[in-house]
Length: 89
View 1 (cartoon, rainbow, N blue to C red):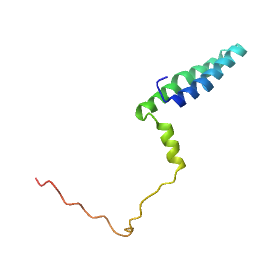
View 2: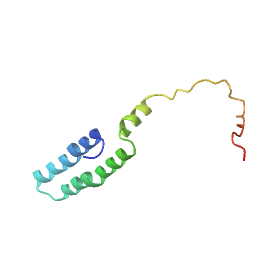
View 3: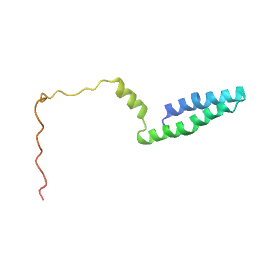
View 4: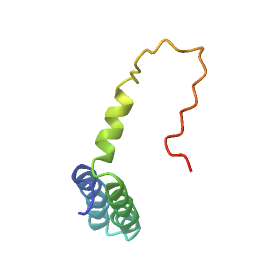
């Protein structure tokens, strides 16, 4: 499959399988266009996401579900200091 297993399985079973089944049952070539769309460009995008991050959809969904937790620092009104140069030329 080449991409994330969950997304690829969902795409192949629901997308390609459903459209392929409808094409066979109705004997209509227009349903094959949908099957080719889900089998080609959509599967390519899933592989592209997996190349960026193998667990992209799982991590992204978990990040949306959880609120952002930041440590309190108590320096809301203080401007940041400039760091000293460690390497002098």
